[in-house]
Every structure is written in C-alpha cells, then in structure tokens.
Length: 423
Image (cartoon, rainbow, N blue to C red):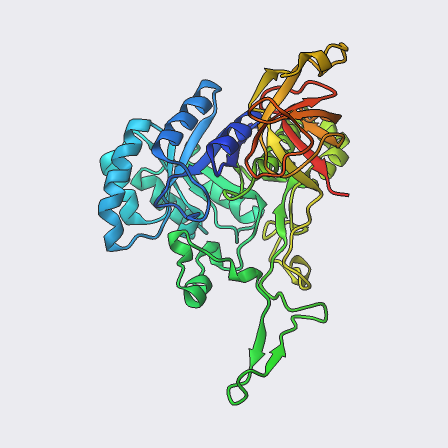
C-alpha cells in the first residue's frame, strides 16, 4: 500500500492560510513577524496566528511556524520571548535552521515538534541521523539532492524520522538558499529574511580601467539573466517522489497570493489523491494537472536537481518576469442579501445573494469572470451588479482592498476564489 504524503502549503497571511486549508492542504507553514526568512511577506501577528491555528486545527490541518533565521547574539533574547509566546499557541511544529535556535526551542517548548529547515544544508544521511539524535522530528532536504540520494537517506533513517522536500516553486541560485548577494548589494540579509532577490536582476561586466563602460554578460546568445532559474514543478512525477520515501511534499511561496496557493494546492491535492487510487487514474488526469498548474504565476518549469544536476535549459536568459494567465479578484468571505431586491426578483440562480469580497484587482459590472472552487471546478459567470459598503450600486471596484458585494450569474460558496483571465 502506498504511503500518503503530507501536502504542505505556504501562507503569507490569515486569508491565504484559510485558502490553503480549504483548497486541500494537509498542513500549512507560516511565519510570525520576526525570526523567519520572509520578512517582506505580510506574516502573522500573534492574534492572527492564534486564529489561523484554530481554523486549521478545526479542519484537521496542521500548522508549522518558521523560525529559521541564522541568528546573531542580539536575536537570542527576542527568540526566547517568541518561543514562549508560541508555546501558548501550540502550533504543530517549528521550522528551525540554527543550532542555537534549536536549543532554545527544545528548552522552552519541548512538546512542539521541531523540523530542520533546508537552510541547515541537509545533504546526507549522517546529517539526518545527527538531527534525529538531537530530537528533531523531521528534516527538510536541501534542494540540491536528487531523488536517488533522498531514497538512500530514507533507507538509512528510522521510519519515524520524516523527510520533507520542496516539490514546487521558485528555485534559489544559492546553495540551499544561503545567499550573500542581497546583503552585499543592498545591506539586506537574506539569512535574516530580507532578501531583495538579486538572482532575478540583469548583469553586465565593467572593466576596472573603464568605469561606466558596461559589457553585456551572455551565458549564451539568449540573454543576460544569468542567475534566473526556472521554477520547480514535480506534478508529473508524484510516483517517483512517493517511491523515494518523501513524507511531506512542500510548496514554496510564502509571499504568494491566495490565487496562487489555491491553484497549486488543489492541483497537487488531486494529483496525490488520484495516484493513491491508481496509477492509471493519475495518468488519465495528467492533462488537467498540467493545464491547472500553468494557470499559476510561474517562470517556466524545471525538475531541479531531482533527476541530476540542472543544465543550461533550466535557466531563463531573456527576462525575469512571470508567466501570468489570470488576475486575482478576491476570495468570497460571506454571502449577503442583495441590497436592492427589486432588481433581483427574476429568480435566476445567483441573483438572490451577493458574494462579499475584499477586492484585489479592478473588475466591472458586465465582466465575464470565473469562480474557482476547491473541488477543481472552474465555473464561468457574469458580473450582474456590484454594491459598495453603503449598499449603493457601482459599476466597478477601482480601489485596492475595497469591500464590495458582487452579484453573479451563479452563486459561489464561501472561500471560493474569483479570478479573471488575462486576455
């Protein structure tokens, strides 16, 4: 019998956490306002973290909290206070890279599982055994490992020691994310969560005696984005990932939108579940997986290091932009009565209730949009009417994060996502 892997999904905010839970995550990982490696993400206050943990736990979903900075002396007292606060919230696991932070977590909240971050450079089975002996529950594999190497690690480890591996998302140019470029160029430390992503920039060479005379850098004839990796995507290789003994399939993206998280979570959820039914079911639905995963923002896809070292085909040389097919409009927070019932008495489906959303991008009455549902359905609908917070009819919603009620030709459910195709 095939072992069911955990689907671990990122969340940058409370809204995205709820989306990840509803759209199929077995677990989510989040960051607080300090001590994680995504300082530019919105991240969670303690109050939001408490609400998110309660929401997830009520639905049988686990929550992992990142505390994976590489700490300096001045970080340690604050880390003590942070772990004491987390002890009260009782998340399911802490993600840690630094041995000092590990010791503090073991001392202050020993009842919470500790997972060793990919930042700790976990590339061999002796490293896994070391962390197991220290009391870690799980180790996140370095992105530089092949499936063959992960399978060898699995064979050398006790069954209760878990392996977590990234299967989808952005790839870092630097070894296991340990990058110094951001700090060098801007003074913002990637290992303290403030990376400016200089791997996506365009570079040229300047000869020492000719300042200001820029010579273009070409890795080949196509361009100059020499550090710009394609994104990892393993949707076509679920059988190999399970065969390697990976316990947790990790999605990268703690700065992504709810639309991205929903699209990736529900696609991998269905792919995993289909494969556990039968390999034939999984293969039969491959076109759907490919089509849906391509609707996320992405930089073209690669399988990273899983089948050997990447070559020149895994880089993008001519630009640093994402492919983006859909615009995120909002998530349905509640269903509300139509303010003007005189215009909603025709009895058509969807005319009796409005979807209340916090707008993320402008759209207008008359637009053809799509309801994206957790079960994989994409329902085309027309925007029949919009109402502002005072119940007044409006023709569009131009203001970011504007709360509006939207009357559609079909009624969505709470937590459904509204999106529009970019033409």
